Length: 322
Image (cartoon, rainbow, N blue to C red; front, side, top):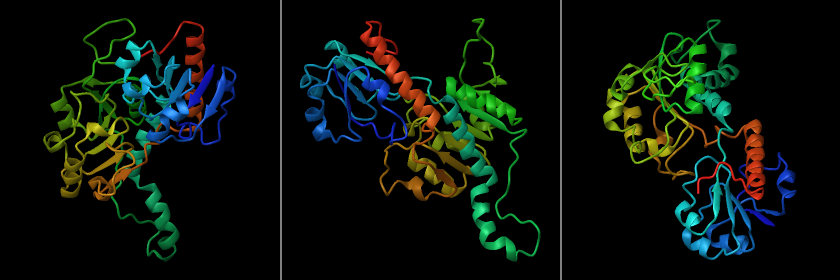
């Protein structure tokens, strides 16, 4: 059984072990694979493991041995799942490995916007010794307690964000209904104080955090129209998908003071083009899509990916998307 990993570096930059995967077959791991090397490297694969490498119908036609594609992520839009199904290739993803880590990043970005701890720490090294007063601040500080956070998308991560927000003393509102364990409908989900329409959420929220999937209905959900409904003091956080935001509209809104700031871990194109307007937008803090990447979350992802293959080899695939 030949197992090929085409882009393993982002999951395991040499601080995890591939040993559990190696026990399941003859394993070869490539840190990165350019498009023109995919067929050459995957030619003998029975099992192909990818993160962001695109596997198209044309490529599958040239990989006759391929029986299984494992995606080292929850999103699987880089795989032609229809073609995989037609060819009898099982495709499985990994879910629920980064809930705590991504939710933590939401508040890291938010606290950067409200408390500016990193910039003040740098400033203190240079200027505090010569300050005329025992304290000073040059950016306004915001207390989260009593503020309203609007959570758009109440999957596992969105629900965890709502839970943490309540611990900060925030009011939580959402547009998404989620059944309670008892199966009752018509109630706000746990950790959410109120379910409202999107327009109301945009108008009332001091912070908006995006956690919905990217689809035709949610593409560029945040645009000039929706941004204009937000408070001028509001912050926008996105750790979901870059395509949820019209990037030029957000950059314009930040530069014109339509909203107060943004914290983003994802962009539409990654790595971004140097001319992406958000890279130079006012009060916009961007991290390089690493909200998911704590050691603990990556180890969990590795374990779940191995579990997916073990289940497939036992004839009982789990987390199957095709």
